[in-house]
Length: 292
Image 1 (tube, rainbow, N blue to C red):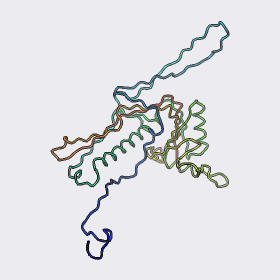
Image 2 (image 1 turned 45 degrees about the vertical axis):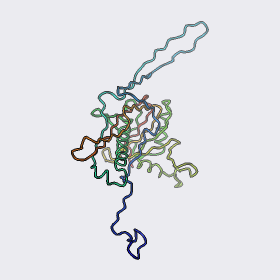
Image 3 (image 1 turned 30 degrees about the horizontal axis):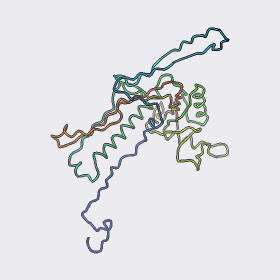
Image 4 (image 1 turned 60 degrees about the vertical axis):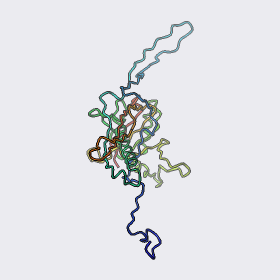
């Protein structure tokens, strides 16, 4: 080291560079739908049909001794996931072999993780608010038969109670809120007449978000700039036992070492093919027209 310098930071090594074995990424939302515990069905690439009973009425089940038992006629239906027309989610990214060799960290592994997280976020957006257009995923907010609370405006705790009441009235067991962080913050700031916060965290509980005793899963993948004023979002309350996810191919990464050999490059290919559906529509309540 040059005389008088005792550390790299103080100038002890004037030409040396240090590179951390880390790839710093922009902040991302967490993937939340799969973490909320839906029913998972894995397939071998063929469409998945889940049979269900649409209605089964027991109009007069009571019978005396030696009296003929009345027949009941269920109305059957099915939920189809992963139709053959459903598109996959695919990404391809090339890197030079020089970059792969010269990086202090394993750049291929770091980039693979980064791309995988982005695909997971894209799936989350599709699972929550996908509209099903052009053979893409139709998410919970656009599913058929769900319960709707439209034009909510600035959300209140009463709105949350109404949503839970609607779910309970349909014999659902709501288990997860999905909302944009802006709306959760707005609800946490609601005060009573004395100025105290109505939604107060329990200082003795683990770090977890809940509203009315139901876990809150935050996602910036739910847009907060829709509607006439470009300031509306949506909140989804779901009984996750009534949500099905079909998996043809989970998020996977393949390193293509020969495809771009003439450029002395390798490629990372990330592929996923999943679908989501609601087994019983009333098990999901959509609050729309949410404003801050």
